[in-house]
Length: 310
Ligand SMILES: Nc1ncnc2c1ncn2[C@@H]1O[C@H](COP(=O)(O)OP(=O)(O)O)[C@@H](O)[C@H]1O
Ligand SMILES: NC(=O)OP(=O)(O)O
Image (cartoon, rainbow, N blue to C red; front, side, top):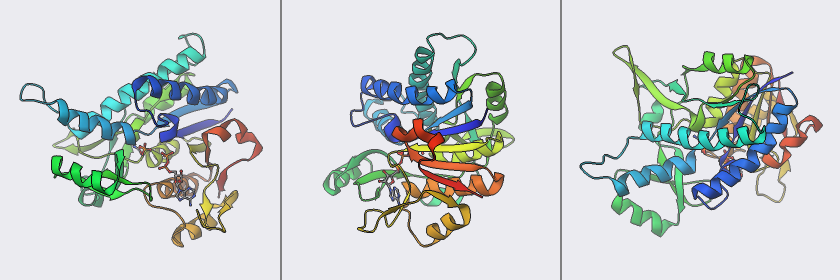
């Protein structure tokens, strides 16, 4: 029996259509894959992204708000996505196991993560959220939201960007550990977790979206997971990505992966955080991390994907 933290990327939740019905369908497909890992007897904690959803929901706040109907701030909007995506995943898992009783009952956990109030990320927005815009669409958005920043997202269009502080302490890690020991399936640190700081000895939410790959790596470290598995759109991380000499990275020592990183092989905002997250996890724990596609998840035992070891 292994303890695994699985991080699920955007395509695990949304494949084009962002209606609730379409996202629920996509989540059902994804959860079937994860359920197979759980059925094998492994302890699996699920971490999911929220980039498209949190950006869309933030836009909806301002569209519908009025004096008597306040727009919610970003920390609360992150919590709202933990609720909605957590609900879809919990429902899909409970349906998958055809019962809602122990064992394997899913538990979507509102997860707060302490970040550093002085994290330089608060002065430089880098995390892409919400819809993709053409240059002209982005200019129009700026008229409605002059307070928002926008950047190119890995050549895929422009997106709003927000601060993305690093996770320092996952407050709820002991709960997640206990849930796993008791054979529950925690869906935790969703959307990277709700960023909070300690102020006057109390927790206070802050405006930001933590990268879920960093949170998954931190959670995997904190709960002493044997493996961190990041499931995304690509089968592997590649060197010379999108170039004629593109080559998949298979089994790789963490030191070699660091060399590729230093050589600028990985695009910021997309694959780079995954690479940095797996390096952190492998270096700190000596355990293995895998980056591969959702469709490869059923073949993890066959050695698919980019497998990073110490
Ligand atoms: N060197 C690279 N190797 C693999 N994928 C890369 C590379 N550089 C950029 N990418 C892009 O990174 C994307 C994965 O990042 P992203 O879409 O942000 O993931 P997710 O939403 O699954 O968390 C891939 O679909 C690919 O287009
Ligand atoms: N919070 C987060 O990292 O979401 P995405 O993976 O969807 O960008």
